[in-house]
Length: 196
Image 1: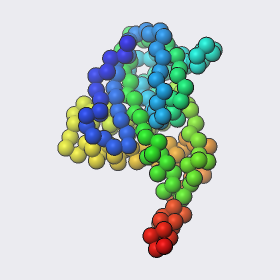
Image 2 (image 1 turned 60 degrees about the vertical axis):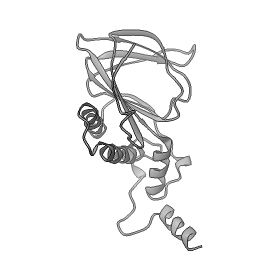
Image 3 (image 1 turned 45 degrees about the horizontal axis):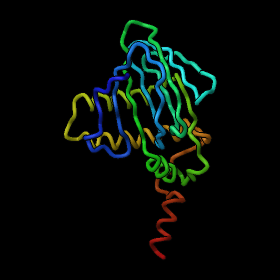
Image 4 (image 1 turned 135 degrees about the vertical axis):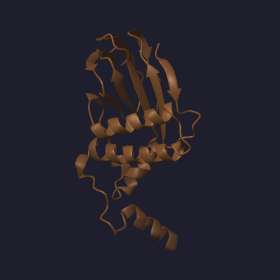
């Protein structure tokens, strides 16, 4: 089974968790847990053929390589997974889990978008230099923790949320940050509530 060798579980990070694994060369019959959080997986090292299916459904396959990513909005149904290495170089993965609360709050701050009308798009085997850089940065923070690690992770989580909402949702690039000096509808509502 995958070997967990780094985790942010005891680091007190807010909004995002990180777990790094060394993957076995081959594995059959892994069944995912239901997780009501966004999951972003970064692959490093050797390539692997990765297959997934819903219970008793057809298999879908993708070959992933160095710096490829996998994005799942939430693990709301179990998935059966299997994989096999396609190169002699060991594969390591970084699993980032982001809370729904952070995504919801960020969507509201971005020009007052209603999170109920935004759906993240599931993607497998794609590359995104910014997501990769954030992942690698958090990976280094796990390897060499610093006193500023908690703030570092919190800032990275916020950047992740904004980037994902702008480029990986049904609204896509239409989401813009509010014009400088103007209140978003959400901020305006807070002011009204305070005055009342």
